Image 1 (cartoon, rainbow, N blue to C red):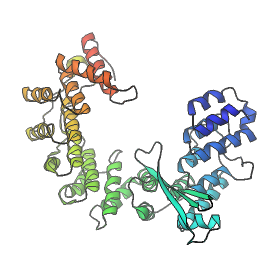
Image 2 (cartoon, rainbow, N blue to C red):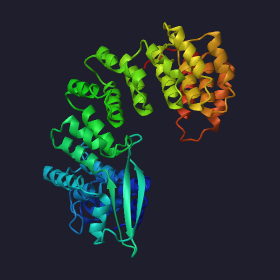
Image 3 (cartoon, helix red, strand yellow):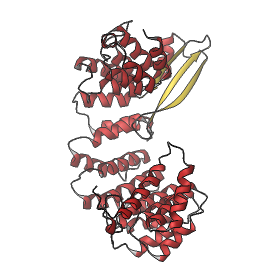
Image 4 (cartoon, rainbow, N blue to C red):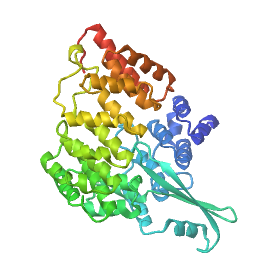
Amino acid sequence: MDAQLLAAVQAGDAPTVEKLLRTTSKDALAGDEGSRLLRAAAIVGDADVVSDLLDAGVDPARPWEDGVDPVSWAADFGAYEVLCELLYSGSSWRKQVPQHGKLAALEIARAWLSLDPEVELRRRLGAHQDEPAVVERVQVPIRDQGRRQATRIRLTLADGRQAETQIAHRAIVTDLEEQLGMSVSPDELLARALFHADPESSDWGQSQVALWSRGDAEEVFRWAASLVAHPSVDTRRFATELLHLLGCQEQPSKAQALDVLRPRLRAEDDVVALNSVIGAFAEYTDRGDLTDILHLAAHPTPGIRARVAGELVNAIGEPPQAGHRPDLTFIPFDTPPEVLATLIHLASDVDADVRANALLTVAESGIDTPTVREVLTAHLTDDHRSARLNAAAGLALREDQRGLDVLRQVGSELTPTDVRRWRVYGVEKVLEYRASGEEVLE
């Protein structure tokens, strides 16, 4: 085996792995060498490297040298990301896992649902339940799932022996059932999400995705709507988040959704659920009347005020984008005066994130009044970089050189990987198109 390639795999160095794979024999990758590399990547838990190996021709269904099946190993260990890569069927050039392999993995993952992870790890080590041990819990981020994560548990005995697992078996079961076309009730998916009741867990996230992607959207909507006032706060969190997700796709009745959500804007006392209610209400409203959320601009929780500031973009003019003709950059829109007043108030909030969101919404609006310019100008020296950047962008888009100067200054301070650099780039492109006098297509 190429020692350099193995070292790169073990280090999780995806760019180097990808480069070295180009000169590695396809026959070797399809055989034992590829399996050894895949095992090393799986144990490290690097899904990017696993993806590179599978794209290069490594067989996800080929047993490792000790006879262990990679898919079954991932299901047993709870390696959610690795398993997702092993089962990915979106690339025609990848070797696929047969149905019987998925069924076997499903049974292995299901077995964990009735187990206490610590007790099971002790059993596997042959240790008594009262034997001294160090238990470590680490949160492992899930790639491509936003804020989702899984908990990795490692149990170490006094003699140094270790065993570990990743708590994502409910997510794995849900994913495998989807791939195998098995029907699961919304109540069962909710129960899996609420087992640990962690909105940031992969179990919670996979249940959300399974419900969101079902073909019976109307039925799922009615089911979730029936739970938005549930006595359990965790159930309300799940239901309102799901309604928000459903709002991102075509739904049967926006009016019905708004009727369900509107009362929750005043009745919901949990900030996590309320955050989702606000997002869902704005999503179903589209561009329209959002005066129902304005009272929440005075909410004591900064995160709620920040959410209101961001969602009010749906109650103002279209944002100026590079795709508009230069003479139509600011599109007239009948913005309710109370919406603008709320945004101006939030632009001076004591919380920096609230200010940044409000200034972004104002900056990208079609509103150009002396008051708006005064607000943007006042924040060119804001201590918070994002707030300062958004204020500068707003003035630059309104042909104010002071804003462009500050925008470029802030841009020069950002690291190459800072996503806010795209904000600077986008504003400069809009200004460039205007100066060219050309019509620009989306």
